[in-house]
Image 1 (cartoon, rainbow, N blue to C red):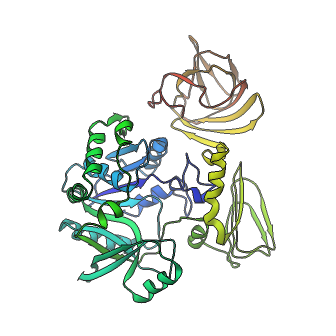
Image 2: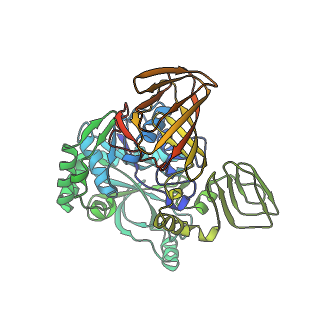
Image 3: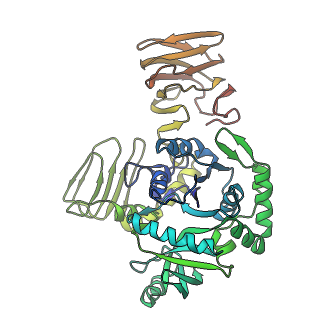
Length: 470
């Protein structure tokens, strides 16, 4: 059985922590591990598992690779989507990438919380048996109440003590209808998790959406290997129809099976959902960071870098990051997406980037900015190297504050230690690398008429980014 990690979401409703280039699945929201890492870690102990397949946006490729490396996980493939096409094409790519078409794919979104890992693993083992028999299995969450934010699955006849035929997939209902569903006892929440043989999924996809399968096969055949990544052909993949697994296959197949899952599941789709799964104090507050809460109750307060103080408030969500603060009533956090839409319409970088930006070689933090200058703290991992590059509009001054820097400046190679500096004039080909065994920290001061990240002309890059400004 091959875990397939779906990591294409943008998590806009968890702004300002979740951003376009660093979405929620790559954040440690409920533990010290990120949600991607938790998704894989909760599979520990299932003996039949093979190396996972990860599917993500190409902008997130280095975060995915690094987070897998941090937990000692080697993926059999990291498939990069040049454009989002929903889950049905993504799963088709995983099925095409499987070593054998008889392999069972365990489809797992990367942004779920599951409290009871033992119950989850029991359900996965049950699903494996049903999938081996040729069924297309979905996991139905045993509901805890009428919820209008989820789709539902209606169970049909019982196949065994732990599996039922699927009678119907149902769209998100209104409250009255959701209450009827719960009272009937015949409905589960739709989890978006599945298990089936690669061959069976492709057979059903060909039956119900042959155009999608043909596009996926064509794009996969034209894919190129790039380091640890499989890059799908953008022009071909852009022609693929977009659809979910539910609509494309599961609602149409006659072999859909649902396995009930009662394991403390939550898809963490909003700040209120995150409040639900976070440990709370005696006043019902979920608090993270440097927070002083006075006469405050039932609130979610998250501080990244500064003291956040609250007085006499209740049922609020307050999130502070180094470049944004968001405040909203808990019952209106679904509207956070409108803030992201507004930021995008204004071309504000806060919708996509944090002040701290991660790169395959390390990260940088833009600590101060003016009309013609930008100051960054740059951290380069041991053995890592930035691209050989030049800039048309800016000069750079580097000061080493920790570690050792090997600088290429035109034809020169210069070794700098702590408290030493160097000036890189505009238009000079240059490179920065860390030859040492500890992280290199430098302060970079940029000056010039244009300081955008896209003012980079790359000549050489060990991470395959010659055509990429990120």
